[in-house]
Structure formats: structure tokens, C-alpha cells
Length: 253
Image (cartoon, rainbow, N blue to C red):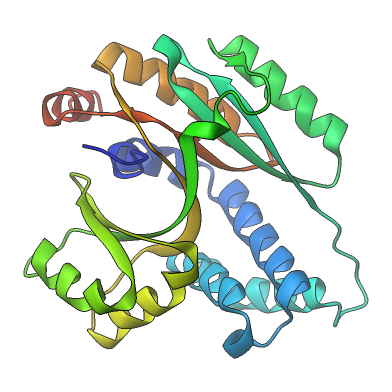
């Protein structure tokens, strides 16, 4: 496996998401509010908002909640939305690099909570730039594996839409694009009748490190603690799991 190991954690993270659905909804709603504030409420002119709503609907966020979030973010309800994006850098077990993306209305609270979660779960904070240099912002479209849809089918659909590669991540595929080509690659999949789980800008590591099951468990534990924080929106890591390690981890479930 390569890339940012999104699919390596899918099964592990699904249980945590199911158990914390309300918290997951809140983070998806926050993304919608920010996207609407930045680019307005018109989906045709705001692909970031369209993708945020698509992801929320895939996670079964009620339509009423989505509509209210769009209105709040776009300033159509008289309410104010004021979040800032902050990126923290750190390391997990065995030097696994972490980028921790926060969306918060209180920088001091976010910093304190991230530091506490890191120190209590075997992580260490890193100096700005010491981790980020290994990551590049890319468009990432995640697709769950289904019968009858092959890697070649996906590649054929996105090849002329600016896709750089299609990566087999075990439980699913990832289409990697430049961020500027994300929308057209997403549209190409839709036109080909291929379903996807999310299409978003993400940080992808230039180099990944293979980890064993024991290290992966420690990293997952740290990620769980960080994701439990209200201000943490996304976590990117540079670990990779072999099929053998994936099988061992799945046996834990």
C-alpha cells in the first residue's frame, strides 16, 4: 500500500464513526458552513460546498441540518460563522508523521487539546514545517470496492479528466489528482455511473513508511483520541500497511 493510507484505516475507523455519529455530523456540518461562507450558497458555483454536502449526505446527515448549515455559512439566517483553520504537526509511534488539521473558533483551546491528546497517547508535537514538507495537497476521490468495478474501469473514466493515478488501497480505490482537476475528475466518475464516497482536497505524503501491526494499533489509538476532539477535522499520516498487517488488524475487530 502507498499514499496516505486512508483505506488502511477504513474498517478500523468505521466502528469509531458509528459510535460517535453525532460528533461526526457536527464536523461535517462545520465543513458545510465554512464552504458556504467562503464560496456562497450556489452549488453550481461552489464545488467545495457541493462536495461537502455530498459527503454529509453519504454519512446520512439529515437534509434539514444541511440546509440550515448552508444558510448559516452563507449569512442567510442572520447567524455568524467564524472559524479558522490551523495545522499542527507531530509524530506517532515509530516516527509516523501526522498532520492534524483543526477548524476552530478558539485557537488556544484547539492547541491545548491537541497537545494533551498527543502527550497522553504516545505522540509528540513537532516544529512547524518539520512534517509538512513531506505532504502535498492533492485531490483525493475515495471509492469503495464493489463487484463489477475494476481499477481499469475507474482509470478509463478519469484518465482524460486530469487524474494522476488510481491507487488500490485494499478496501477501496483512491483517484489522485491535482487539486485544480478534482471537480472534473469527480464529474467524470459521475458521468460514468461510478459511485464514490468522498471527493476532497487532502494532504498526501511523498514517502510512506511501512509499519507492523503493533505500531499500527498505537497510531490508530492516537488518531482516535485526536478525532474525538471537536476542533480536529482531518488527520493525515504517512504510514503504510502490507496486506499481511491489514489481515492481522482485521482479526482484532
